[in-house]
Amino acid sequence: MKKNSYIFTNKEHSRKGIMSTILGIISLATLAYAIIMSYRQAGDIPRQYGAAAMLVMIFAFAGIVLGVISKTERDKYYLFSYLGVGLNVLVLAVISMILYAGAYGL
Image (cartoon, rainbow, N blue to C red):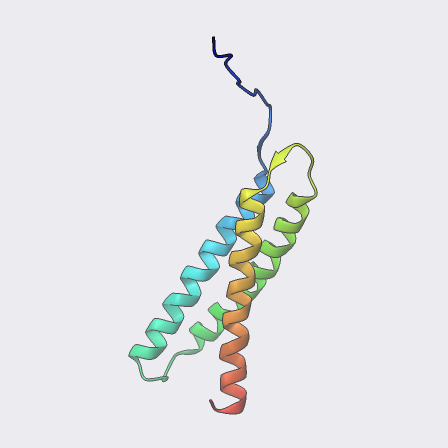
């Protein structure tokens, strides 16, 4: 006779981790939109895209902080913590590449 092996737990996803992931998705979508629209206009972009990129950087830093804080919580699932930190680091890496390319004319 096979014994059922269920594991009951009261773990749940961290709210800060979920918020970090949401900020990462918003940042990535906004940055992708700004890049696509800049490409379509052959680099002649309005100032609002630069302002959006600055706001994306603020969101990404806040998302990284929230993701790291959510990772320190006990008895939680950490999927959204890792996902949020990863997305926000990706956004910062893309912005860094754009700034590097703009500064050195690549």
